[in-house]
Image 1: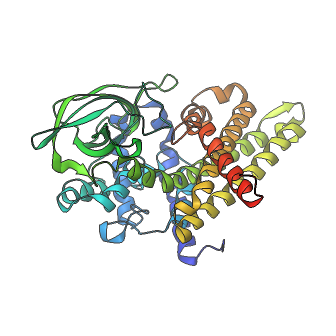
Image 2: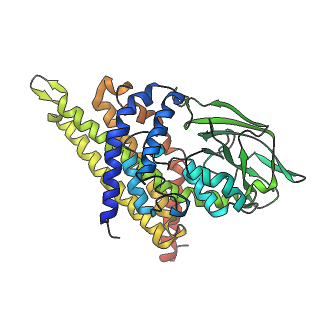
Image 3: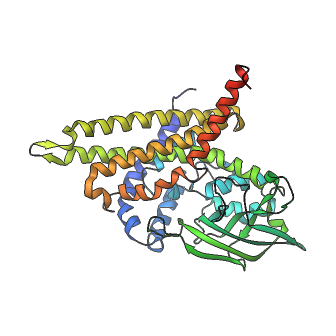
Length: 402
């Protein structure tokens, strides 16, 4: 693949980075210390600025109001936006909305597009994705207890979900529910649009993540669906295709995650360098003079470079060969990049000492909220087993050891 960035894309990235440093980084202390309802109006004004700059919704098609970037180009944007916690939100490409928009673009009916897709892309509403359940393994989406039973012209949904990210204030949820329990495992579930003001949609709480419940977009909810009735025309895509659609959503989404994680690493490495060059370690010495600190910085830089090249190569393979051909690459980057990010953040926290444990910098916030990267979208161990099995099968076939 060609790693050169076009002049147009370079200009876009320069504009984004300038905006982040001038408009968003100064808001970080407020984001860390104030409730969502207080910071949201400020972020809304920043979103309007991004729209006027024609940098809104970089991932989504131009005909729907986005920039229409390809997967590799969008990965580069994710890397830039992730340097600050509100970057993806202010630029209209935040999860879970970004993934939901991709599903709606491919599977929504004209009526669903008008009601849900267009205002979602425009940033007038938010959405959530309701799949994970507390009593079933999140890494195996064919194992679901939530059901959607046909009742006349409706579905009656019952079930218990959690980690339904951004449900607080969302206009609608895309719910994974079993519609045919007798079908083969991968054909049992469907995706159904559920407006959050539907009776029976009960937001129980925003789940505290390492002590922080958050609010609004930056939250993870527990939801009870209790005789939640929605019309059957709210079915998204063919019945029984929920698993297939989920896999389509999650594959490219892992590129977004991984490039975002590399962007976080870049910000954290910058913080490490600044701290090392300004903090005394002994009379006449700085942390930057200590070999162990130099080793941490060098190791972080090398690991980040390796992860970045892996992710960009994976994005290129998805674009040129398709998601199926890139399955192994997707699993590799998911667990490798998440692990690199965790190590880099941990080194940064150690380097900052007591300061790193506080919310006076972003280090502790990243440490709390990004540890989950090794869990969501498939735990590391599942991806490693999947890759190893595929490698062993290919080796066995090639050497007649099957």
